[in-house]
Image (cartoon, rainbow, N blue to C red; front, side, top):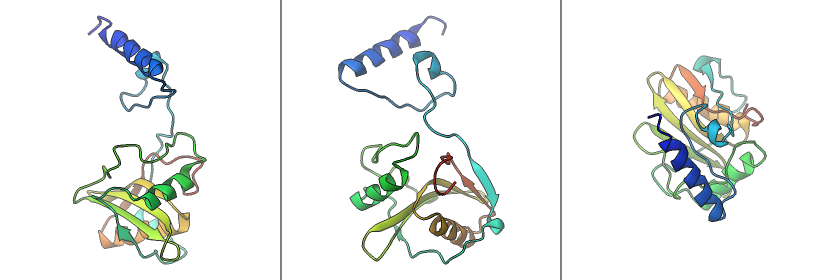
Length: 172
C-alpha cells in the first residue's frame, strides 16, 4: 500500500491494451477508484425495488423456456442485443466466454418466442430471501412485467428489485 504499485501496474496494462489494438476496456470494481486511471461509469447503477403485489400486468405472461446452465444461443444473444443496442453502457453479447454465467438453483433464466420461432424476450433473475432480483431483461415491457409477476407468485416472493436498470430502457 501507498507505494504506487497499482498505478504502475495499471499504467502498464492500459499501455499493453492500446498497443494490442484495444480501443476500450471495461472493468468492475471499487466505485470511484478507477477514475484516477481515466475510467468513468458506463451504465446506470440504479436499482428499483417494488412490492410484488403492486405489479399489475396488463396481459398474461408468455410461455417460456429455460436457458440457464447452457451456452447462450445465438437467437437469445440477438434478442438481447436488439433490445439494448440503443442504451448507454450496454455491451454486445456475449460479454463473457460464451457460457451463461447465471447458473445454480437460485437463478432463473427464461426466454420466450414471438410466433414459436424467434426469441422475443429474455429474463435472468436471482431468487433471494423474499425477493426476486432482475439481473437482465429484454423484450416487450408488458411481457417482462407479466412474467416477473408470475415468477413472484410461483416462488412466493414479496418484492422485486430491478438491478442496474438503464434509465432509457423500455422497461424503465
